[in-house]
Amino acid sequence: MSKEKQLFKNTAIVSLGKICTQLITFFLLPLYTYILTAEEYGIVDLLNNLVSLLIPIVILQIDQGVFRYLLDCRGQEEKEKKIISSTIFFVIGQSVIYLIVFALVSKFIHNDYKYFLAINLVATVFSTVLLQISRGMGDNTRYAIGSFITGLVTVVLNVILIAVIRLGAYGLLIATLFGNIFCIIYLVIAKKIYKYISVKNIDYSNLKNILKYSALLVPNMLSWWVVSASDRLIISSVLGLATNGIYSAANHFSGVFTTLNNIFSMTWTESASINIDAEDRNEFFSKIFDIVIRFFGALCLGVIAYMPFAFSLFINEKFGEAYWQIPILLLATLFNVFVSFLGSIYIAKKLTNEIAKTSIISAIINIIINVCLIKYIGLYAASISTLISYFLMFVYRLLDSKKYVKLSVEKNLIFSFIIMYTLSFVGYYMRNTIVCLIIAIIITIYAIYINRKNMSFFVKIIKDKINGFTNHN
Image: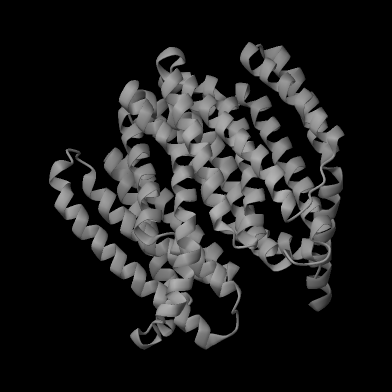
C-alpha cells in the first residue's frame, strides 16, 4: 500500500468515530441555543475550556508521549507493557494529587458547577490516555469506536437531560462525564488494557524518556489554550458571560472544522513520523500539504459562502450577534490547520521545544491584541486576535520547517484563494441574498475545480476497495 493510500485508510477509520457524533452535535445546536440561556451556554463553555487547560498540566501531555513511544515498538509486547504500565500508574498518581489540591482550593471557588471541574477532568484524562494507547498500538479501529461511544453517549444524554428533564447546564456537564466513562469501560474491556498493566512492569527509565518528550508539549498545549480559550476568560470578565455564550456559538462552526483537522492530524502525525527520514520526504510532504491546502481551503470558503443562508437555521435569534464573528474565526481555524500540519514535522523529529517556542510567542501576541482592543471593538477583538496569532505562527513555522522538509506550494493556487476569500467576505458582510447566492455558486465551482484531482484519487481508492471486497466474495 502506498504512503498516500495508507494515510487515507487510517484517516477514514478514525473519521468514522469522530465525524458522525460531531455532526449530530452540530445539528443539535438549535436545541441548545433555544433551551439554554446565553449565560448557561457561556458557563458550560468556560468550564469545558478550563478542563482543556488543566489536562496538560495534570498529566504533562503524557498521552502524546505514550502514543509516540508505542509507535516505535509496535508488536513488541514486553516493551508495550512497560510503556503502558508506567503511563497508567503515572496518570493515577497525578489524578490523586490533582483531586487533593482541588479539595483544598475548592472552598475558595464560588461556583455551582465547580465539582464538575474535578470529576470531568479525571474522566477525560483517562479516556484520552486510553484512546492514545490504542492509536499507539496501531488499533485505529478501536480508537474510532471509543471516540464514537464518547460522542454518542454525550449527545443522547444531552437530549434527554436538557430537552426532556430540563437540567440545563448541569445536563451538558453530566452528559460529558458519562460519555468519557463509557469510553473508558469500552477500551479497558475491548482492548484488554488490564493485561498490560502491572506494578512490576513500571519502568522509570521509560517513564523519564516519555515525560522528557511530552513535558515539552505542555507549553504548546497551554499556548493553544491561550489562543483558543483565553478569549473566553477575557470576554467573560470584560463583556460578561452572556457575550461569551454568543462567542461560543460562533465558534461552534469552526469547531466542526477543527474536528476534521484533528482527525486528519492524528493519522498524518503517524505517517509523518514514519516517513520523516525517507529519501522522498520533500515530495511526499509537499503532496500532502497541497491536498490539505486545497481541501480545507475550499471547505472553509464553502462554509463562509453558505453561512448567510444557514445561520438562522442553526442559531437562535438571541445569539444573533454571533453571525459577524463566524468568517473571521473560520479563517483563523484554516491557519490553525496549516500550523498543525507544520507542527507534525517537529513532532516527527521529536523537536517539541520548537513547538513550545512558536506556540508561546503566538499566545502572547493573542493576549496582547485581545486585551488592547476588546474595550474598543468588543467581541471582534477576540476573533481578530485569534486570526492574527494563528497567521503569524503559520508564517514562522513555514519558514523554519524548511530546515527539515522543503515544502513546495503552487503560487497560482494561493493567489486564486486570496481572490476567492476576498469575494466571500464581501458577500458575507453585505448579507444581500442575491449577491450571496451568486458568490456561493462561483465558490462551489471553484472548490470542485481545484480539488478535481484529489476527488479522482479518493474515488479510485474506494473503487479498488469495493472491487477487492467483491472479488474476495
